[in-house]
View (tube, rainbow, N blue to C red):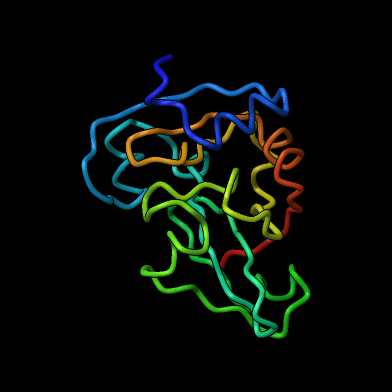
Length: 158
């Protein structure tokens, strides 16, 4: 694997001795997760998107859920003990996470934010998350992802 391909997320997974595989695909700009899954023949329930919210308290929270599902903001707030959460603006993604839209992953953000992964991940041997760059995916055992990120699981979809 060339140096140019390695992302911060991959370096962290390796440091934490979390086994993973990568998958790359051609893409020069943001395309939503459903289109990528369709393009690559991947199941929606196995392909997870990463969303970042801001809580009423001012803190940031990370949620990972299947690409074809919508985040239930009330359930998400409850999962992190907040009164309410709202999605951050696209313009804030890089400033808050260090990643760009379409390359945001729960591993290796600028800070370690509280993270919640949809509970359906526990029914799967592997899930697919962004690799930290557009065109790169990480395929990982969800239990390893939970361990490395310190995540909890909850039912956070509508």
